[in-house]
Amino acid sequence: MDILKRYEAALELYKARKFDAALEIVDELKNATPHWKKSFLLEAYVRREQDEFVKEFILLTELLPRFDFKSADEKSLAADALSLFGSVNRVLGNIVASVESFKLAAMLEGVGVKACTETSNALFAANSAENFSAADFRELYAAYKKYSADITPSPRRFYAHDKIRVGFVSVDFQWHVVMAWSWALLTELDKNFFAVYCYSGVKAPDKVTNHFRATVDVWRDIAALTDEQAAELIRADEIDILFDLAGHTADNRLRVFAYRPASVQISGVGYMNSTGLDAMDYFLSDVHCAGKSSPYFTEKLILLPRSHICYEPPTKLEPAAAPPCLANGFVTFGSFNHFGKVTDSILRAWKKILDTVPNSRLILKHKIFNRSDGRDFVSERLKKFGFDSSRVELRPYTANHLAEYADIDVALDTFPYTGGVTTCEALYMGVPVVSLYGDRHGTRFGLSILTNVGLEALAVDSFGAYVERAVALAGDWELLQVLRTNLRGMMKLSPLMDATNYARAVGEALITILALKEELK
Image 1 (cartoon, rainbow, N blue to C red):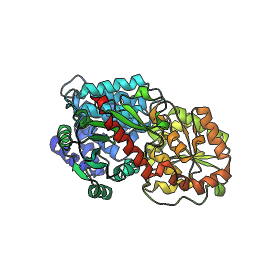
Image 2: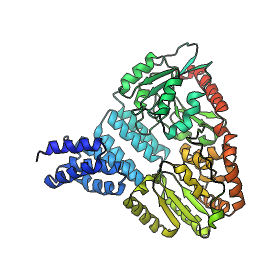
Image 3: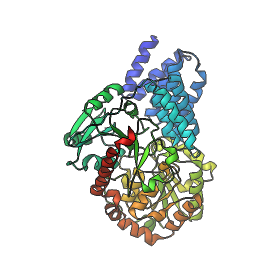
Image 4: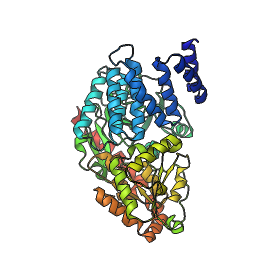
């Protein structure tokens, strides 16, 4: 057997998404060369793409001890394996292990793009950690800075254009949840004062991409450009304000910002926490989200008076006519949040809620439930907390998940990484959400959203109050019916969907910070 040729064949099948065929060759390679790690690593990639997270986790758990992290020949491969291990641990809710895996992967990669990517992964995962302090975040910010040592920021320059040139950088100018919050920002800024430039990292354009391409003032594709090339392009465009819509989320282009290609640089909307970059000047927030979160930020906070996001629903699907409790005779709670956000503390709270509300049910929905091993893994975790399996339904991911809010009476938010678009979707479908908030910015999205809709009473600051509020809401079926009927109208009339005033508030803030340029010199 020509091992390399068979491996290349398996790799091509993987890239073509012919996963079963790829696995057949991988099995051959594992049997023929059991000590060759690349075939095991390729299997881990295949398992991830097939949503077989538990199989991936077991495979990597067995593979990682076999690496010699001190070997120059194995460092890159080991870093890939650690990155995969960080990702799968996040999906399974093992957040501490996830952060540590990403940190070790970054250390093995050394200075440059890959190390920055792994540090971004660690930072993103850390937002789900129950006990992650401002000092812990700053340690990761320092690591990102160290791994960006290959970047020399440009001197700051200011321009005098007829209109303020606002550039937006994102890989998500397509059908993506970030666009549900960015639509008004990209389309409603006053054209008398602003010219909108989009720097797109989209690799698979769709109708949303084409819409923005045709409507913004200037469109630039940067997917194929290095970070330095993208920064040079932005600098040549003389951008006054450059807006990052990704933060430390997947495939971000924060290293472009590290070159400081624009006069003023802002992050926000698509990420819930600080970037930690010296070159990032501001972070867009609001008076509800900010709280006491400034110790977590290296940027200055822009505090909008109402909401720092504006929700644009992806579909006009109508909510169910009535809450399901009226037909079922019992209350159904639900969470459609990423299961990696579900901490032990939240599970204890959900268990207490179910115990207190007679005959109540809980529906969880996420791609971890697409496969039986994922469902079994979560079932075992729930069993450890004493959940009655007959009262919990684990639903796989589906594209039409909004329709399934018809089966939910009360949505339960996660903590400390709360829902964002998920919370908006539930409310839009007539389902009230109970949310817990803390001091950190990312814990307060529920508070901001609910306050802006007029349901601030459903946002609480302790686990005890979270349980009490959920139980009280579950006991008031008349209120559930009223909310099912009126929540969408409340949202449409609220700051959360007022695109005109939202864009005006953001525009005023942008003009203000550009006028304060002396503070940035």
